[in-house]
Image 1 (cartoon, rainbow, N blue to C red):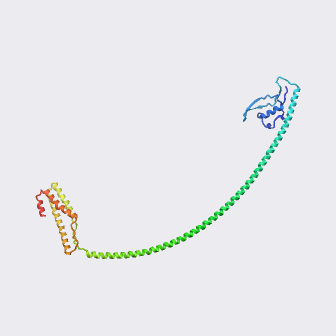
Image 2 (image 1 turned 120 degrees about the vertical axis):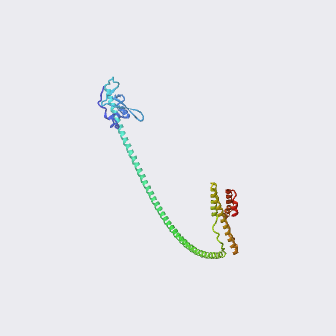
Image 3 (image 1 turned 45 degrees about the vertical axis):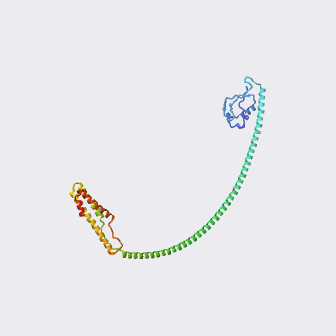
Length: 335
């Protein structure tokens, strides 16, 4: 059984130089098999699984000193077979070195192509940036021109508006002056009219005063001197009625003499008052006839007449009810 102290370092892939043995890729394993032949059996110390986007990949951890067996473990080969395997290994190493050089060249070409593409992209970006700057410069110039034009237009508009406002103010002032003059004229006309009206009123008042004076003089001429007929006796008659009722109440309370006397006294006073008023009216009528005036003398008022008739009729009736009709006739005859 042949032993190899260490795997040849040239058999390692450049991509896996800085990687641990536990993270070898499956491409590395295929290249290892290509380099050392498919009849070499590698016995790992442990197997470890890891997750992959597409499938699970078996990763192998190697020993520092691996043992290579040629064929089954119970068969021993001679020196010729070992030499053949050694030649195969060297040929595979040469092939791998050539492939590695080719790969490095391809990588360099790829990197150069990438750099060239990046340069082109940068140039394009620079050109686009320059174009954009020019475009923005043009846009800014246009905007500035537009702003200047707008400012000019606004200034012109403001000037026009100011001129129009000044014109309007002047027109307003002229109109106000005219209105004031017209108002002053109207006020003067009103004052003159008021003066005329006052004069007219004064004249009318004077005429009215004259007319009133004439009327007063006529009334004084046509005044009728009538004798004053005195106070109204309706209140006196009402008081007499109250006393008569009081007398009847005393009679009803069995104070017969006192009640009859009070009623009799009230009857005498009432008849005398009525007679006195009648005589006064007669005298006034006679005086009017003597003066030959058309005015009639004043008569009794309706209250006086009503109370007089009730007094004439009702108080004797009270006496009749009290006395039973004996003395009332005599009293009425005397009255």
